[in-house]
Image 1 (tube, rainbow, N blue to C red):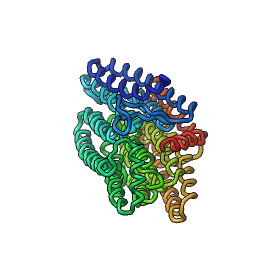
Image 2: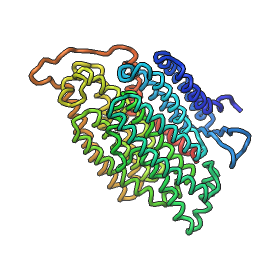
Image 3: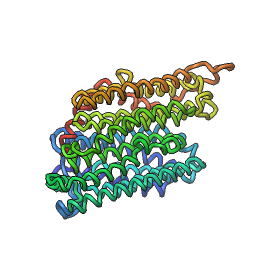
Image 4: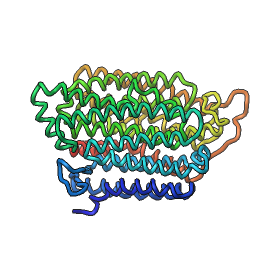
Length: 498
């Protein structure tokens, strides 16, 4: 067996070790170690991606000496490797682009704790990507929830404490529902490993009397992950959670954590339930309707706020709706569009959450639109990167958001007439609303402040900020200009899922 097949396990073990190690380091040492560790993780994930592309197949790593169906397994294909690599690139860019605000927002004695939590979060993210055991998925869902609350509450202001408590309560409800769904499926199939569970479900589905129980189990499990990822109408925790977190936390939570829950859900639909069986369940149609509602209402709420970070947070709710709409389409093209949008939205939202604090910093530390007038001229670097993120969110050609919407449209063309009409209307209305509030914000940050001079011009040319932002911009443009490369990898990975 090739040594590279050990790398998925290494990413989990090294992340757990790094989390424990950072507790014993000083804040500055923990930051430097975390950046180097994340670089190593990128190399490991890239090696797995190259291996799966070269061999053309996925591989399974058996934990311990017990084979299926009793043992625990890690399974890696090109989609898992691509997602792991993408997540690690976003993570290192979020840390390096926002560490200055970590030092400003956190007490010095808690900085090492913050990086320890980020590394433990990385272990949970990697586990959700690689696991082939549905109960192991639940275990690391809980770890991801706890670390997410930790990086929120470590910034000790009243709103973050309230946001962390609300976030934890809702996520624990979601985790409980997910566990209940897992228990019902286990009771019905006798398996926890995903592939044996799928074989059992395919046999059980053949008997019509078993179908209501399977639909109920899958529905409960779906509701749990929908709550945790922020699908409408469960999105009301997002503004406080993302809006008052330190920039690195807001970037990681919006770009990675919510997407990890959805990635696990897609994996369950593909590898546990089976796309053919799931297409016969009413759950997909419900997800599509809720996704479209999220696209519209999230955008309307983003338009109504006067705070830039809260606008971006409500926008996240709308973009989560896009992903669930793709899942609801039900075809391979729909899943491809959903996964592509996970990548497109992750890189874009990370850019926005890392630029808004820079714009606020030259606006009297205010995130209110009125005070941010002209901030793009006072901080030209942050203003330019904010424009890139805004154009991608709107769906301007050459950016990732445009390609993403094209894939949703193509997926709808291959579905029923009703789905085609709903998707096209939703894309048109949502894109129009996105344009209204992002163009409005972009015009404001480049408008001359009324009644006063432009103010002090400041440009952040430090490599610690500009380099990760250039990397995120390059990824955004790559997904926009060479979208078929990512789409081919995603499609190949979805075929490996089964």
